[in-house]
Amino acid sequence: MWYRKELRLSPGRAGLHEITHRVEEIVRESGIRTGLCHVFVRHTSASLVIQENADPSARRDLQESFRRLAPENAPHYTHTAEGPDDMPSHIRSALTSTSETIPVAEGRLALGTWQGIYLFEHRSRPGTRRLAVTLSGE
Amino acid sequence: MWYRKELRLSPGRAGLHEITHRVEEIVRESGIRTGLCHVFVRHTSASLVIQENADPSARRDLQESFRRLAPENAPHYTHTAEGPDDMPSHIRSALTSTSETIPVAEGRLALGTWQGIYLFEHRSRPGTRRLAVTLSGE
Amino acid sequence: MWYRKELRLSPGRAGLHEITHRVEEIVRESGIRTGLCHVFVRHTSASLVIQENADPSARRDLQESFRRLAPENAPHYTHTAEGPDDMPSHIRSALTSTSETIPVAEGRLALGTWQGIYLFEHRSRPGTRRLAVTLSGE
Image (cartoon, rainbow over all chains, first blue to last red; front, side, top):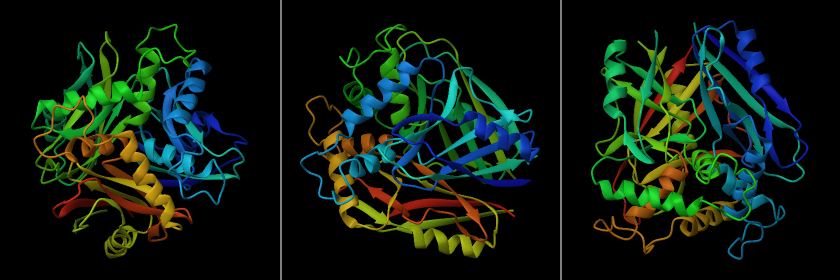
């Protein structure tokens, strides 16, 4: 059994935005009890991470760490026409994930207790983000 | 056809722990001949990598490289209540993978000759790690 | 419905090599209309990224950034027998992805407008690269 749905997000600013409940809603709609849920970001300047859902300080530190791993205005960048946050966005996307696949068990996402699914927005002024959610299972 | 199984691991210390044979065992049990095997870590301070299974020095260098990319006690960390290895664990998990999907062909994992599946444990004193293995195929 | 095919690539040099059209060809062959396409690199010194397909400068900057994140000849490397590009290859592979899964909709890869699938070759003088493409769907 297959189920597909587009998820549109307007995050508004750079950082980690939890989407667990939005994905969970699609899992429920699908009626699938056992299977896999695939979430795919259709952009190259935003990505996905599965991270701790308890303490917001962990997400802020994570964001700051990626700012340091892929800084703005690095002297070797030549792809600069789309602004100082463009090239870092591509690097941070490559370092994290364009898609995540999560098990579905008993009709729910089988995440660990402390895991949440986050859109990692790398752009300062992003447009609407489109994600493709695909479920397969029985 | 779907097959699900939980894998419990007690790695005992930080570093790369091979789990290829444990996953292969579940593939055999499933009876699936052609399909995909999805391995998912239900934690945010341990992750997965598919890496060279020949020379242990490659794994040690990899671990050391991630120690440098996401060091302990970085001055910008604010999420420090759970110890100096907590925030680096989250960053190293985001830089690697919460899940890996491996093709199954002729009833076996279709890994390359030099590839092994590793749990990358980022905590110094981890508890038991729970992984969800999901197979789909025919 | 399942469809499997091996993809052999002779990239010839380090860097990002677009394979979108090669994967798209296999999607067409499969006859699958709705589902998922899984691409898996059977090596530990080449990997996959989904990146911007418009401006080549973004890919060059990305490659240079990974050269800096995982440099050749780092003083802590002990795994050096296979040449100066070997250990960086493993680290860059761990930082990116051994496999990517892309949704299939209406018989085509449902990539975003600016997304392309790239083999990220980390070796200076690679041999032929073998990828396993697995489709499931209906």
